[in-house]
Structure formats: C-alpha cells, structure tokens
Image (cartoon, rainbow, N blue to C red; front, side, top):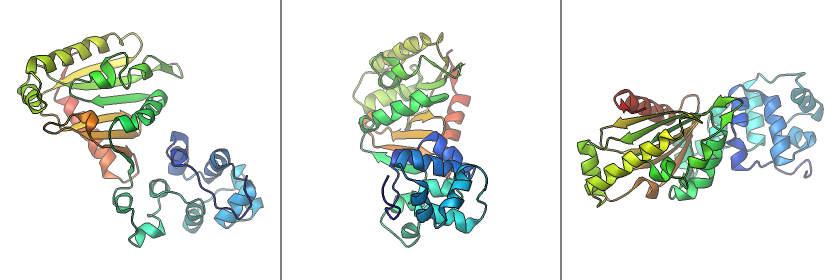
Length: 283
C-alpha cells in the first residue's frame, strides 16, 4: 500500500485501459481514484496527499457524494498522480510541466496520441492481441494479410471467433487487389513474383471467408500502392509503414490512441474509411 508520502505511480498499461480512458474523458475523478486504488494499490490517504486534498474529501469523491469541477483541482490530481500527457489531454489539460518547459519527450508533447513506439510489429504483438481480444471493432489495412489475420497462427486469427456481450465482433479488412498494377509494383519492391503475391491475397480472402459464421466480417480489395499498415481496435491504432524492400511487419509500429483533439487517430481512421469507400467489397 505504501506510506501516505510515497509517490503514486500507475504502470503505463493502466492509463491505457479503456475504462480508465472513459473515466478521464468524462472527467469522472471518482472513477479515476477507484482505478488508482485498483491498479496502484493506493490508499485513500495516499491519494489525498498526492492530490492535495483531505482523506474525507477523497472518500466523498470515490463514493459519489462530491464531484470535481474546478480546473485547478484537475491539475492537482493530474500532477499528483503523475498522469502521462495522453491521460492529461483526455482530461482536457495541457502537457505536464516538464513537457511544457521543453523536456526530452518531445514526441509526446507534440503528438500526445502516440503512447508507445515498438521497433517492429513483433515487439507489439502481445499488446495488439490483448487489445483485439477486448475490442468490439477491428479494422485491418494490409497487403495480403496472411501474417496478420489469414492463417491459423497469424497475429489476430485467434482473437476473432468470439462474441462480446452477446454481440459479434465487427471486422473490416482491406487487402491489395490481386489484379491491380499496384500489386505488381509492390511485388517487385519486395522481390517477389506478382503471381505469388496475388495468390497470397486470394488465400487470405478464402481463409477470412471461413470466419463469416463467427464474426461480422467484411473484406475489400483496394488498388492504390500500399503505404500504411493499420490495425485498429476500437479507439487504439497500431500503425506501421510499407516501403521498397521493406515489409510492414518489419516497420516500427506506433501505438496511437484517440484523444479529443488529436489529429493522428482521426486522420488514419478517415484514411481507412476513404480506402474502403473507393475499394471493391469481395464479401
């Protein structure tokens, strides 16, 4: 539990959980305090010391007898709980003091939606799978998608055949059109024959069709040269890039989470919608 003067430090994954982010968006400090108790093991006394309140006030907030509505109190809570900048933005606050004064974490100050950067997709695999298992919606933008979703041992396949609260998981997958000039160019970029790459796309489509009885699944073929590799699980994106001689799974992978005013999540989601709007649906 720690002494009342011991700083409260939640693990990064706790701030990234969907229920914590919902509480921050709603400015529900009572729920935030309850999650701090749950994930950091902090007592009401420790929370009170961190937030500059009395324990009685914290107890009232936790039990719904008092609400927080003043900006200076939100600031004290955020500072006292050492909220990362992404969490502060969800609460409607500016970056932390060390970020505003030109601290080292420039990328978080500039793009608070980017909460983690992985060297490759494989480094992010466990996190992606955890997010996919809890999601209600899953979007995938890929080239052939076999390593992501098409094969039995692919990254996402085991996460798909299920229902969430009685509702089938909604899955949308956009793959590169096997008959497009863009596929021929992409095959040349990675040193593979167009016939082989096209066959991989068609195999992925056939395997995804097998999931139609257990998921609300739809698949499209797009015809533009692939640039971004995207996995979206509800309000979280995992983004990598395609380049000449460089396949998507080898790219650095950015974890991007939705914030009220951030452009990256909205921009990538809008791009995905534009891709499927101009693509041919296969099923």
